Image (cartoon, rainbow over all chains, first blue to last red):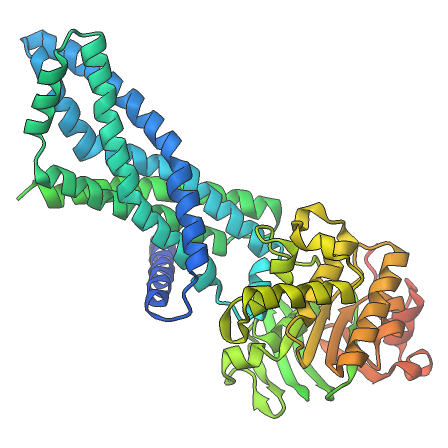
Length: 261
Length: 248
């Protein structure tokens, strides 16, 4: 039978490990943000990261939002028909896309596309001594690699979410007016009338938070990857899982913050 | 002068450095030899601050390297990494001129490119490779680019980490000659780690043998063959029998 001290140790060890991991991540975030206020600033790297993270994520975010908006319109129409509420399709598509699905799906797509690529790239740089080379060339890897990516993702996040919201609503509009017989002008009017300023604000704030989380997790796991191909693979996998879970948790907290009083 | 005084470093239960003492005089080319996993790379990285020793003191011209102003300290160094460590996302000339395009040594872009092309020429590469990317070059060419990058800012001290690993004997000879020529012509202090004895004879003024985390022997390269140290003799003769345990 397990002794009381062994039982306590079995609980204490993972708890301490978890706290240590949270502490390491917090220090990493603090270190990253601190470089925002200390020169030199690598503007070319920021521009490149904005193009790579923002511009090249537009197709996947747009397609995801379009099909989700369309599917949402079909679901609301068939579900609403059970209590004669088919007419609420424009309102529910709008609120669903702007408040929840736009930010969350864009966030998860950023995690899938951007977090994985950042983690794999930085982990490979670590394994091939490119990070050490940066240091010997008097360049701080946090400033040169991490900050531009985190900043770019935080700027691109709200833009991508805004695009996802619009394309998602357009997906619902296309299905509702093309297949479900809604009047085009009335659909748009209902959508515009129903969305409130807070809906848009919350959506964009979520975009910034999710972009920040996605990039931080990619950089953190990349910088702390193990050796060899296995280390790179492990870092990539863990970064995407951690980013996705944290995005969903942050979404819950931000929704609570914006929409409950 | 670089001085390591009683330097210890462990990774968990793996005690890599167990009291390393080593001195490298200004303008001298020191080669540290030793088997794989004996702590050669850790020694070199400790000097640069890429690895923090558990105890002991490393000084450069009498100043503790951990207390030196980081940018000014690193500006004195150039390093050729074992695998080149070229930045995949940058063109060859941008790799070579990396230091000249940012930071305290920043130059205008055109001037940095000119210097990069000149350094590429110095290591035997044509200007045409300047706009290529590292993945388009062979291993030997990547080593040369790494060498060009190491010397681009004309450092006082150059470190070479296994400069000939993975190269064919002819290319190894070319790289060894280049290193020797460049170190002499720049008057730089050099520290090389290798287990390639051809490199040792081509590059070294002095040799230090690292084994089991301590310097077993150090002396002039000319004295290496007759030093009488059993560790050095076994290593340079490549014998399986001797005080250095060989895993079969």
